[in-house]
Length: 179
Image 1 (tube, rainbow, N blue to C red):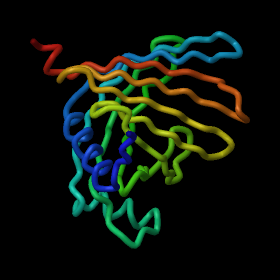
Image 2: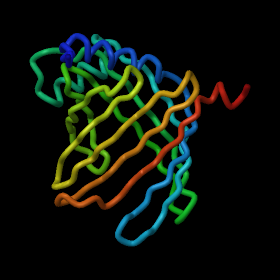
Image 3: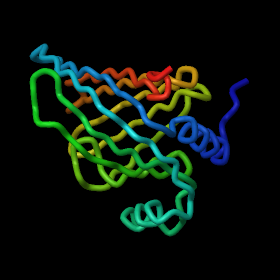
Image 4: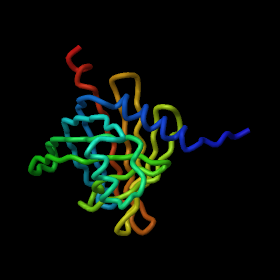
């Protein structure tokens, strides 16, 4: 028998996932451009903060998405990235995520400064899968918490139904690096 998750169940899973993700992370990732075979390596320092429903950032995010209801919870992610190869200028930024039902609201997309939404689900208590679409591209992402100190992520970027790039990430909680 297949059990269907309720809205409250999936929101509770998202809340737990964001709570377990809080902290400082070192992200090492590699992007593969499929057509050319080019590879790009990036190292990032990432900070993740949990956001309660009544925080200012989530209220502003709900306004940007013209929502009548408040968001249940969310996260603020800030980063500083260094590109290893090919070399590019370091990148600094932030983004806000908010949850309502099975929709994740973002203040910006991967490749746009405009607000975007993603459908999300959980394939296990500690694995979140997202699908975001805009400007003719689709972004499929899987984030998996491994123990207390590791996360893996994989992003597949497609355009016109064809995969064009894959990003793979290993993220280590900074407290684990000091141990």
